[in-house]
Image (cartoon, rainbow, N blue to C red; front, side, top):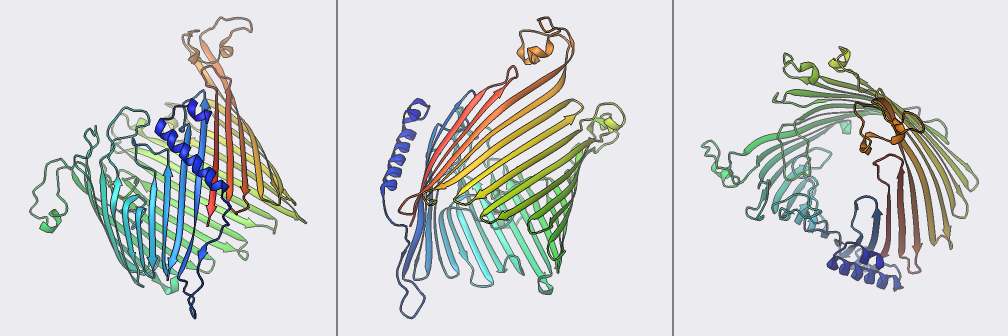
Length: 612
């Protein structure tokens, strides 16, 4: 425990960590066999009165670093548990996650979930993640409850609870952003089934609690009402299908802004949601179709997200986007070859309110071929065009505003798998080549240099698996990037070995790696200051080998660094069937550049899993 005493970890966190360590030792000393608790079925039926299973896991982690700021806390403990049980057909379970890394300066990462189901009824409570529709409620953690009813072709889902806790503005380390306490309530009612013929309607209401934060800084309390209809249609035995979803979001950026008096708005709407001067109405939607017949399939879709669209039921959404997509696919040669293509085109500035419009077009082709039972081949090509155009072409800076980059990527990857008795060999080769061309107007007119580059990346790996639990592998990688202004190279090599001891009760794997990355670029010195190391390496500016005099002019600067890595993992299965997993990872960086930082980083963890 000396490590934890020497690091900056609070007394309360250290106490929790000690308690978790004691709990871990207690579990390790147990010799309880891993068996689920199950009673015999009721006579003449397959209904079991009671059955129970689950797992408990404990994770303890230590972290140390020198030379750079710490990326993780110095010590962390975590407990996770999950139980599943059934009582006369009623299925239920509990999930728990507790971590000492939890911090009051940000949203909680701890989780507790209870789940229960019986036939077509399902109930969840605690930390739930309802996914009702793509643009309304999708992925946000709700600390509350989720009810799902699905008796055949009818479905009803109801969710509600707190999505954010209040976080005050502070200057303490580790603080991210202030947050009001936030609540969300949503429901989804549907007829049919997802992926088939269906109609569903999702409603969401979410709001920030006024006064929940005494000092919010620049944060504003928001309110959101979202309505989403969904349609699904399947024709001709599933050969043709259509899906559509449209979310209309009424979003108030500031609940303290002035109210609006709108006579045309129905009274029942204003009783739920109060329109204000900061209220905006936007929408997001998607239409998708699929046609499949034999070995051929084609998917297409259209997506549009209006500028300013927001939903408090989403973690993040990129608004002001419009995209068309087409993805054909065909299987030939008895399914030994799969050829797929992709075309997409999109743009922003949907309402012409920006100075420029960015258009994006992507074209791709991917082929996977099984040449023999031992040889596979993958080939792909992708062309990506990004072009930013000024809306007003008569502006004096129209040429500077126009930006166009065209990227072309080629990739080839053959793989070989060979077996000789109990010994298996596998070889994988990868190679990719990328070209980026700058075709902006200022480049084609000769007003400035292009910012294009070429990039080559290759890799080779070999693995052998021997009888008795021994496996060995080596891999290497080479990268080269060149542009008119700089050149970068990278080399990497890794060696891996693994062995299973004691009749495969103990498995040990060790990986040792090395990489070298370097850059070379031209720097023009107009007035050199020897006391400023940021100008570059001293060696780059010496006029003679034994002179400390420096001249103004153009110099080539070379910088490189070496990184050394180690990853040691071990897994041991105890006599009671449980497992202990240990892992140690280390990284050491040794640059040669003046002003660069040398650092060493180490992370060690131990995990115990008990199943019952």
